[in-house]
Image (tube, rainbow, N blue to C red; front, side):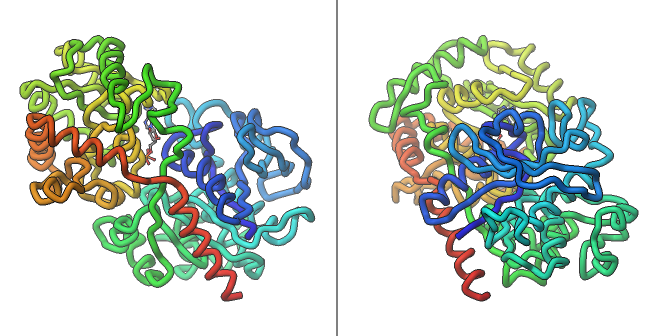
Amino acid sequence: MRTLHVCSELFPLLKTGGLADVAGALPLAQARHGVDARILLPGFPAIMAGLHDAREVAQLDTFAGPVRLLCGRTANGLTLFVIDAPLLYERPGNPYHDANQIAYADNPQRFAVLGWVAALLANGLDAQWQPEVVHGHDWHAGLAFAYLAALGRPAKSVFTIHNLAYQGVFPASFHAELALPAHFFDVHGVEYHGRISFMKAGIFFADRITTVSPSYAAEITTPEQGCGLDGLLRGRSTVLSGILNGVDDAIWNPAIDSLIPARYSAERMLGKAKCKTALQEACGLDVTSDKPLFAVVSRLTEQKGLHLVLACLKEITSRGGQVVVLGSGDAEMECAFSEAAASDPANVAMRIGYDEDFAHRIMAGSDVIMVPSRYEPCGLTQLYGLKYGALPLVRRVGGLADTVIDCTLENLADGCATGMVFDEFSVDGFAQGVRRAFALWSRPKDWKAVRSRAMSMDFGWDHAAIEYAGLYRVLLAAT
Ligand code: ADP
């Protein structure tokens, strides 16, 4: 089965969030399960730099100007189609916005071209390789599904929603510019409250819609979590399902991770103690094995619920815990965590920025990873926490609910608990989770049993690869 993934990020070349991890790992796992998966990306500088042995597939005159389509390989063996268009993509830093966090004004054209080229590839643009399935990810790929529909659906299509909150909504005037059929600007099409929505295009036109956890698939059909698209999603619920993301075991695995000070596994935990000491030293915290070390590795946005952590910092430190935060985003939150760290440097540390290597060292060195999200489509950090024996303290929502089992007495007795789960999105709700973490910490035997269970969980990509392959097969059989 030939599948073309369409997305805007790819680990390790370019990453702003979990989407990049998925794009980097899923196609490799799919190759193990009979899927010939390739990826179409915009030619951002980091992507161009990571492309090797490229051949030119085509030169195209598009509504956004001339582009060249290249096909090459990455160092780790992925085959990429890359849209080489310096005027659209040759900008340093973040792929979506400038250094002042202002979205690029030509984002409609930049990402419409991505969808346009995907549809052309499905229509036979490359004589050497034609996808049978186009699998687009998030709003950046949304228009691919409209263009496919306009071309008479030359391939089957799957649209995966990684985060419904980011929708790519632009003024209606762009509709004419983007070479979409006029009648697609309709409530049964790409129109969304008088504007054009890339996310809606994906949801409306794709043959199948998936999201990255079963719970999130259900949640987005409700007004609370539907971000204005719940009505449409309810209407398409028969083709909507959730497939959990996985973890790339070659990258996130404490037994072989060269980014951490010492390697360890559930059977040989000495290395984790060394990693904790090293992390405390690196952060200027009191070096002690007695205090549970709570960590955050996150974008600092409203979604992630980190104001709850801020409100409970005292609760954690007064009970004898320590906190380390790695994150960037919301300036007020960066400031608030920095101030908290300055006023109690022995117990609280804040590292502002995006640092992949340090994220590994935090997972290895901490005891608890906190993910108190308002909503969470899947969440990867809690999965990394499980693998590294940093017990997740999470809210019961989305993928967090699907991947962490609360340490209730019953679950402890059954030996299935893997972390702490709280329900209510409030300071009180989160504080209860914190208290449960301390209660477990005070019973070292139980703590070790839960940690061992957490580390044995299998969140490999093979499960997802098999499920997606099944989905493609059903679609192709319906031809
Ligand atoms: P989202 O995609 O909403 O940001 P996920 O949990 O799905 O959330 O994925 C986040 C990914 O980004 C994880 O791989 C996490 O380790 C990484 N990450 C987030 N913030 C940082 C940071 N400041 N430094 C390094 N890695 C980060």
